[in-house]
Image (tube, rainbow, N blue to C red; front, top):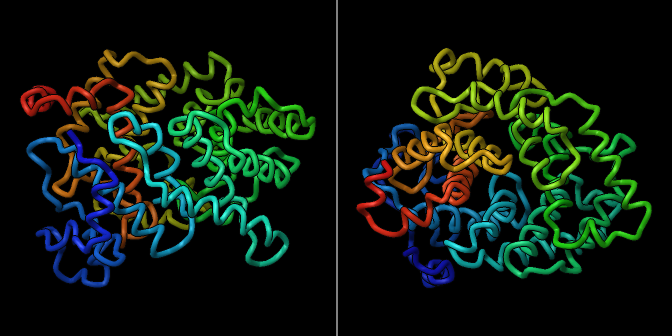
Amino acid sequence: MVPNVKRWLGSVGMGMTLFSGLPWIVEGAEAFKYQYEFGPIRIPSAHPDEPVRHEFSLELASQYTEQGAVAWTRGQQCVTCHTNGTYLALRPSLSGPLGEPSQEVRDLFVKLLRNGIRQLGSSRGLGDSHLIYIARGLAEWDAHVSGELSEDTSLALEQLFKRQLPTGVWKPILESWPPLESSAFQEATVAAMAVGVAPGWLAGLTDQRLKAGVERLKDYFRTVEPPHDYGRVVLLWASAQLPGLLEESGKAEIVELIRRKQQADGGWSIRTFARPEQWGDGSRAEKLRNENDASNHSSDGHQTGLAVIALREAGVSAQDPAIRRAVHWILRNQRQSGRWWTRSLNTDKYHFITYSGTLYPLLALHLSGALPEVMGTEDRARDLR
C-alpha cells in the first residue's frame, strides 16, 4: 500500500532529501537541474531520457505529486495552474486510494482568496485566472474530502461571478502558456467544473445574479466554437461536471474524435490536438514546428491521462478496448521518478506539464478501476502490463 501522505511530508520536514542524485540529470543542463526545489525537496529536471520503470509504482507517483505541490506552495506562495492548481483540482478525488490531500496547499488557497478580495482594485489584487483555480480546488476539496460546502468555496464562487465578463467568461492573466494558461475558453472549463462539483452550491442558489451568471457561462459554451480539439476534450470533461454545456450529439462527436486520435501504442499525444499556431496566442508555433519529432508525435502522460478521464466521465466503459489499451500504456510508460514524460509546449526547460502529466494518469487509472488492482499485488501489476 502507499505510505500515508502526511508521513512523506513529515519526512521532508525532518530534512529528508527525495529524488536527489538520480542518473538522468543530463550533462550541460545544470541551470535546470531540479524541476522542483525547496528546502530538502529536490526533484530532478524532467527529461525524455529518464528510464522507464519495469514495474508500476503508485508510491513514487504519489511522492512526486505531493512533493512537487508542497515545494511550489512553500517556495512560490502562489497558485499556479501547472502545479498546485492542478494538485488541488485533481488530488482530492484520489483521496480514497491515496489518503487526504495536503492541508497546507488548501490553506494557501484560502489565504490568497481572502487577501486577494481585500486587495481588489489594487495591482496586487487576485487575478481572475488565480481565482478560477482557487474556486476549483476548494470545490473539489469540499466534494471529496470534507463532504460539504465550505464558506470559502462559496466566497470564491461568489467573487468569481462578480468578475464575470458579459460574454460569460473571465479575462485570463496569460494567453501564451498552453495548454493550461492559453485562453479564456480553457479557464472557463475549469470554472464550470468548480460550479458543477461544489456540493450543493448550484442547487441552493437563490441569488438571481449568480443564477444568471451560471446561465451566461453555459450559453458561452453552447454558442462558441472551441479553439481546437484540445478545447473539445476539456469541454467534454467539464460537461460531465456541469450538465447543460453540450447536447448528447456533441458529446458523442467528441468521444469519436478522441477515439480517432488514439495512437497505435494505446496512448495519445497532446501535439495532435491542435496545430502549432492554435496554441495560446500562437507564439509557440515556431518552437513546435521545429521539434525533432514534429512529424511523428509520441504519446505522452498528460494527453493520455486526460483522454481517459474525459472518456470515462462521458460514460465510456472501463472495459472499452480504447480504455484498456490506454491503461496498459500508462502502466508501461511510467519513468523511474514516478512521473510520466510530457514535453512542454512552451520551453524546453522545466517541463512543468509532467506534473499534470502524472496526476492525469493516476486519476485515469482510478476512474478505470485499475489503480486498486495495481495496489493489490506486484503480480497483478505485471499482468496488467
